[in-house]
Amino acid sequence: MTRLNKFLSSLAIVLLIGGCATAAKILYPVNDDPLQSKPGVYTLDSSHANIIFAVNHLGFSLHHGRFNTIEGSLQLDPDVPENSTLYVRIYADSIDINNSKLDEQLKAKSMFYVEEHPFITFESDRVRLTSEKTAIISGTLTLRGVRKAFDIEATFIGSGANPRTGQQTIGFSGKATLVRSEYGLKEWLPLIGDEVFLTIEAEFFRPT
Image (cartoon, rainbow, N blue to C red; front, side, top):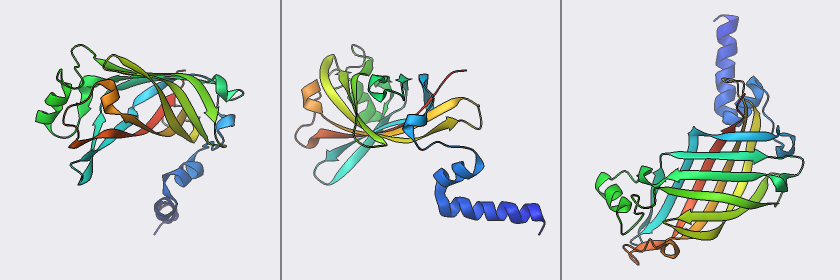
């Protein structure tokens, strides 16, 4: 085995053992301190963004779905994180629960009513740090024409120059919960749960 092959084999073992986060730090600089991230206006990388929801199904399981089309922007101020702002726009008709018939029912007037309300939006008005890498992002969620206060529990993942594009990139995970009936989404209650659990994964990049 050549030296190069030995190196590649060793590297593969490191990647498998250490996981992607460790691999990233080995191959290129990744910053794990959110306050050292580069400031500026970032755009959501829609190809590396996921909004996944889960709702109780008949008391037997949590059924999952997602939205496939998402846009957004992040104005980041690491010197004064409380001044940072987040805006997200979700295309309601991109809902996907891996069942085309039920997808169409969800898009109809009795639920998301996408013809009248094509977008779901979140606009922040406050960021409150809760630890070195976590924050509560508070703002307004607009869903089916109803505007309500909404909180996202955000966790910083990492930032740095993307090795593929050279663009400054920053990533977060988030969790949130909403009560769907408060937004007029009352179909199938109480058989299908009223509480909806959201998992958010997002990368933002700073255009060059």
